[in-house]
Amino acid sequence: QLQLVESGGGLVQPGGSLKLSCAASGFTLSSYAIGWFRLTPGKQREGVSCISSSGGRTSYVDSVKGRFTISRDNVNNTVSLQMNSLKPEDTAVYYCGVPFRGLCPSALMADFSSWGQGTQVTVSS
Image (tube, rainbow, N blue to C red; front, side, top):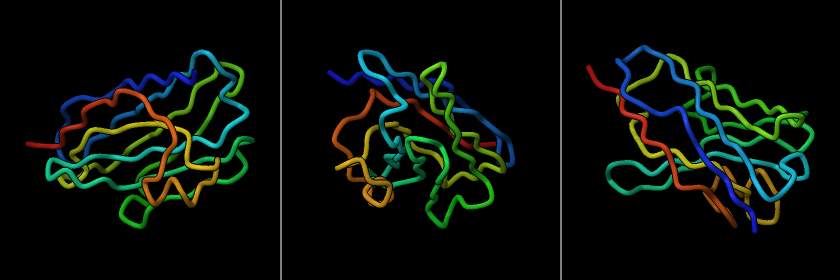
């Protein structure tokens, strides 16, 4: 059973930064593309970013391009999402997961086959 655990969320002021981490247990993360999606306070689900299994390809939703960076450490079985220049509209619960059929375009459509419990990110002054 694929198990993923997100961490690193919190409260930050607009313009600040946070780094989210996604740890895997029960499987080898390097075998999978991994993505992030978020659930906004209005309960909208939005795909945020995705990284290929090798780490060689990344993709982002337009609203976070240039501000967020996804990376992976296949030795330590983790995927990270560095979030800079945060805006109040980035406030959401962030989830990492395995995109449907292992495809990053699925991740950007927030279509996942498994995901963790989420971590809350709140951007507010």
